[in-house]
Image (cartoon, rainbow, N blue to C red; front, side):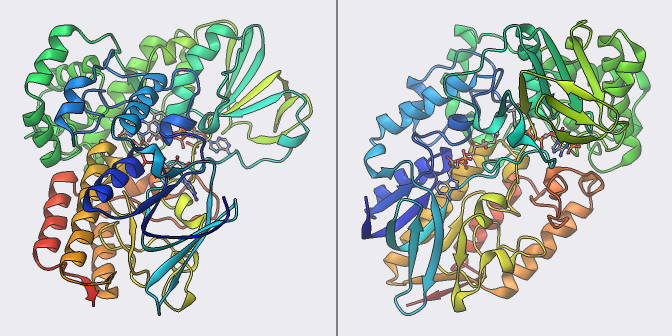
Length: 534
Ligand code: FAD
Ligand code: N01
């Protein structure tokens, strides 16, 4: 469709964020249009269809809380649901709340320009459709712009190349093929055991080994589901005030205070529980104190040595270059054991770096490997990539890309000075990727909706973060991050995975409960740190 239409709000993205935002804005009576590049809803769960893709926050917690009816109706089948099940859930939500009629699919937003006179955004797309809107809400995702390995030659490879972040809908059959996988983050670690089970020969190219633990995935029992459903409201309330959006008793002691036997037992219990924060959260200082962290890291390295028969291979798979948890830990199903298979090979890119993709396969500094198929499990331009991919221009025609040239600057990860009536859902410098994201998504969407309701009630037309509030928030986020071990790792949290990206800690470590209190206080104080105009 071409031509310009006028609405109260444009939401970019129809993942978990965009769908809930649409639902809430409809509730306010705003005319809203969602623009989505994909041909369907789901965002992450639409695009990441690689084998083994699952959530790593338990399904009964990684789901919307806004509708008690929805949470009673839907029944998750496994501790960690598969991508197809999560996508079915998101599609169910879209249908149940009749969301699709306000979504334009197959449409990528290319630019958004603020007109200071009319106080409205003009949003342009790659289909020629333009939309004129008062509010622009970027629900574009923290992990939605995939990145390839930075080597030449992908276009001359005679076989097929697939990126985990935009996997073919029809799936990929690896049976009998020679397969190369580049990347050992969560996507690589989830997919490698399944690819190995099909492929004739699998070579994994590892630049940095990662810490992973068994997910302990299993079907949920009827009794477990019933118990959680009976108590869901209290559980949701606990999620909202917790640190990571995953309620758990808080550790009270340092790992350095307890005996070796006690500490090993605590790590072992965490290992057996198989969740992302079970070892990190065992002691107060895992992410604060290198000596404490080393104990957790060594525990996991011991597990790798126990799982992998060849000691040299086990050592190559053992992370030593960053503290445990400062790159997102992974949950797996048989990852380390896969390397005991005779047809599975590991290439250490620190010893022999990648050079190029050739017509036949992959060349490292010492030899060429021939493949039928190559998988890029090489991750994303996280947190800022989807926002800077759009040419967003605020007051005075200033571009967001330029403003963020040395790293993102936001107020609360929700708003940007110089960009009135623009909101970012789980934007940079909010807890976002350090949390159970659906908890953070709902909190942001609720806050934005309440803010817009306030503006309308008060007859206000413009809301904009002040430079002072933004500066203060950026400094606070940096200071909080610097008190932890996170900045010591070359992680995507630090922008370190994308060459040339400024090295800035991209999330807020304060925790979702503390952060929510801060956002609520800002609203209660008449939107302190924002300039509101009539
Ligand atoms: P997304 O799901 O990324 O949706 C953004 C949408 O915006 C996409 O559909 C995209 O196509 C669209 N879009 C972007 N730019 C444009 C544009 N310019 N024009 C039009 N459309 C655009 N988090 C957890 O908390 N727990 C988990 O277990 C978990 N598992 C994950 C597994 C994988 C494989 C990945 C990649 C991420 C995972 N995450 C997890 C993080 C996950 O991204 C979030 O939990 C959540 O799904 C994000 O929802 P969203 O709507 O904010 O963003
Ligand atoms: O991406 P990653 P991902 N040459 O960036 C390597 C979420 N998620 O898609 O570590 C060689 O983690 C790179 O090496 P290095 C979750 O938040 C969740 O796996 O940079 N190698 C790394 O090994 C996760 O953290 C789940 O040295 C290159 C890998 O590719 C986030 O999404 C599942 C390279 C990329 O790992 C991203 O995960 C999947 C190059 N040029 C994703 N470039 C769950 O389990 C990159 N690499 C829920």
